[in-house]
Length: 151
Image 1 (cartoon, one colour):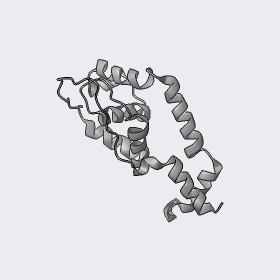
Image 2 (tube, one colour):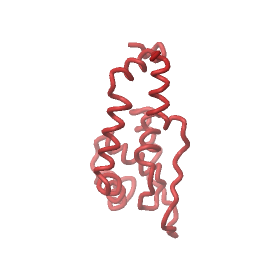
Image 3 (tube, one colour):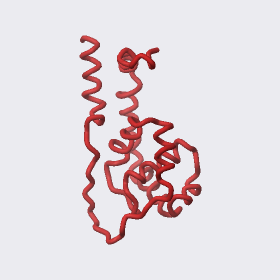
């Protein structure tokens, strides 16, 4: 197969998320709770985006995290940013009390990691093996990188 066609095939099969809209989540329960503001969410977003870049953040928020509704009266996207912040910055769950109540963050953390760990593990393992870790995909991506990133 021609390398350009193979690259396009990899992008089309495994990187579709780049061309999809944000997921829409139908809420099963309709609470009367108003959406609450996360303290200093802009600094969290800035830190995460600077450290990871927009594509990995978009990928996490739309493909991995944003596929279901999570408890607590905060925007789903902001909950996802907070989880990424904990992972990237290495702060403890208790440290997140600066932004939202500790119990609320613990609930989001628990719902993401502990409600279905086997499915999350399967999803991440599959994505890592098919999207990022093949020699062919890395070679083809390197060829198409812009000049400053050629190596």
